[in-house]
Length: 247
Image (tube, rainbow, N blue to C red; front, top):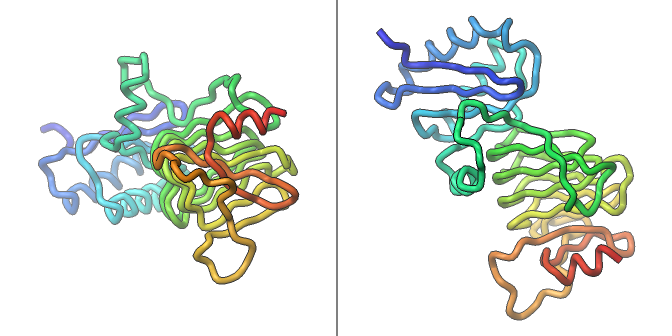
C-alpha cells in the first residue's frame, strides 16, 4: 500500500507530497511520523517547504509548520505554493526540467543589484506568511508575497516580486544606499539603515509617502523605497528612478 505522505530533502529545501484524495485530518498523523523518522537526517537547518499534490489553506499550512517545529529541529523560512501565479511565471522562465532538483533557497550571482555589500543574492521562492522571518547579510530576492506579520532583513537590498505587506529592513548593517523594491509596496514598516517609515494608515510615527507620483502611473509598475535627505520615500521603480539612483 502506497503512503499518502512522502517527503524529499534537498540541501536547503523540503518537498512534501500529499495524497489529494485523502482528507487533511487523516494526513496529520502520517506527516508527523514521517518528520519524526527524518528528523536526524534533516538536522538543524533553515529550509523552504514545497507542498505538492494538494493546495493547503493557511490554517492547514500553519498546522504543517507546527508539526515540523514540534518534531524536528528545522526552521521553515517559507512555504512555496506551486500553484500561485508567481510560481507559474518562475517555472515558465526556468530552464530546468527536473523539478525535484530545485533548491530553495538558492544563491545566485547578480550584476544588476544597485546596492548591497556584495553582488550575491539569497533567492526565496514562495510567500512569507505571518510569523516567518528571513534574515541574511546578502541582498534578498523573494519570488512571492510578504504577508502581514512576516519580516525580511538584509544587510543589502530587498527585492520582492510580489506584494510587501509585512516588514522589511534593508541596509541592516548601516548601508544608506540600500533599497526595498516590490511589485506592490504596502508595508506595515520599512527600515533602511537608521531610517524608518510605517504604513500611512498607522496612527503614530513617520509615514511612508509616495514621491513624484505621475498622473498616469501604470498600476502594475513596481515601487521602491529608499532614503532621501534622511527620510524614507517611495516612488515608481523605473528608468527615471534608476537614472537618479545611479548618479
